[in-house]
Image 1 (cartoon, one colour):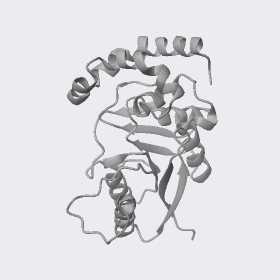
Image 2 (cartoon, helix red, strand yellow):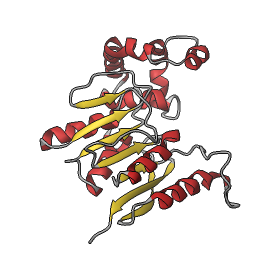
Image 3 (spheres, helix red, strand yellow):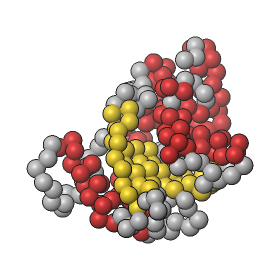
Image 4 (tube, helix red, strand yellow):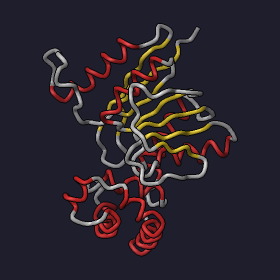
Length: 245
């Protein structure tokens, strides 16, 4: 962890570069709820968020990663990039869905691809605040069931929430492996009939069902868990791979 003086210096620099982009990315709900610009919110609460990661994690965690304020064992983007590299390799054309306002995971992947001199990374998210980052193709649009997967070797998502089902359906339709660290929310369609299972497992049950129902015959699905590097929360992981022949 870095000291308060250095943290302030890095946050001030980040906001001076990207603050206007963050403000433009605000939704009407956020404007009404925060009653201030997002850049002002960041400058007001960054210390609380840094020393208590559960406070404003969705806004601040990417920033802390980008400015180098997180040690590797507390950096969820560094840790997920490690897992993807170990299981699939990063010398591939990768699509990330739900990259957030500043795609910290994609940036971590791009840095490693640059060293490999191979692979590419594309990010889809309608909430993107930045529209240009060297080496990353940014798409400020939702990833839907109709999104084409052209020249893609792997699709990844880190807590992609509602986009989880689209990732699975599109990846399986195009016979592309995927790796998803699931959120702990419940986005199960209200119309879905599900068995009597604990509420916290309903979303996982639904996603596993969708995966198996759409899985190509020569693919296999794997389930595991991981620990969120920031919050310590246990997260479900679902992934697919081509079967060994």
